[in-house]
Length: 104
Image (tube, rainbow, N blue to C red; front, side):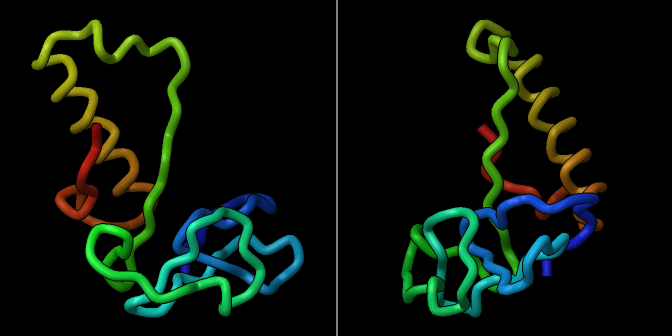
């Protein structure tokens, strides 16, 4: 389960919860994926394969940082930002930073 949320939020794609005002989300079973956030039923997790499916125990997160102007930064600054994001996301999730992948 994804935990650590202080208040009720919609579960991200790849997860679901059947609890009202939940602060934890349940991860879809291996080989299944929910394509929308806020899913309330495990049956929302449908069969998937290849790049449309994450490994068991994984979650995909989209983060928008408004005004960051990422593309205007040089490659070293972009790499530093990705490393910082990975480190902070990993710390919040309680996992090693090497497990946070595919940051753009």
